[in-house]
Length: 468
Ligand code: GCU
Image (tube, rainbow, N blue to C red):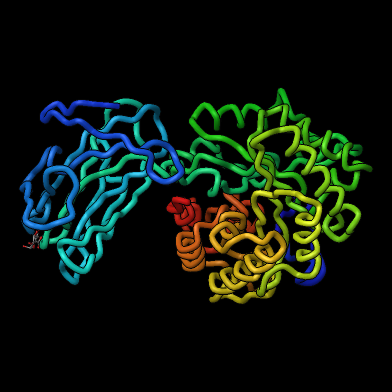
């Protein structure tokens, strides 16, 4: 639940609580080829046979390779292929390896960038036979300019046969906007966001919360200014480090703009002030409590979002709300239908699958179940295909102990959610919150720690593997 601390407010029952370049290798003349892979940014291919090899050989004894051959790792642990790749700017990039593994066993490899192993024991599972090629994508951070990317076999059987490396492409932006953990700067001992970025690779944050300052005017937690303060300084630091922010309006506690602004146009004006203050590309309406329970306010939010979308071409909107274990409750269904009927092309419908009496060992499964319920509702309201529907839904879990005594979201549950996201390519995979993604010290402040044994950012590191 998105509680506004420091006054943690107990809340009744689980339903209310359901808040929830081109570059030349120095050693080999390489002409990488650019291609537009999928719908994303341009990608560049680097052929393995042109890379620097150690204990591997260039081979052509199977079909289906690209370029003039592939690399056979010659069944030696420690054999490697090193690519020299160019990045236009520093930041997160997808490395996609095209490989074949005609055996029945995994051929794991360590992936290093500029001498540091950034992904160890990456699985290269069997591909049926040596003529069948598959891809494996790993997200890494590259420096601007030249980088050395090395794939080293770790098992005695050596690596798979390696055809090429593609840098960038349709998953090149991930973990991008989809993995934007909630962080709050006004409470809960906020970690330095740029330290979170370096530790986990995430670039985006969802900042909580903008509320009413008492009237129809936005302020951080209802009191801190949009500009000139610590919040703006932190946003600037995130952006300077190559990241960006989603601003979240609402949460469980405090005065909501949706209620304090008496018309849709006034509410749109309040949202617009925040959009303008930071030049936002994405806003999140975390609609809970009294803002959620009033149909009048829900319609006001829908109409205000239509206005800001019309006035800010390209602006993405997220609507985040509580759920049952089987998906949106009647209020959630009403909200989705209301938005569809009003012609709001909301980008992401995001549920908070916790605080619903889920237990301690199956929150991952219950989350995927709730997501399938959400999918069905969004699909029927908007008439989308399955794949388009998944691209319009997301989840925001809560790591560790939730607000519901006896409910626990474990790392294993996060892995289940990651697998679901990877299977369906959902639009948002986030959680409440990065402030809580650490073990508790002597205290048990639920706004600043998870209540479970863990290392810092263990939970975020799972979601940070999501490539969209
Ligand atoms: C076979 C196959 C090779 C492959 C090798 C391996 O010999 O033809 O292409 O590299 O197995 O086990 O790695």
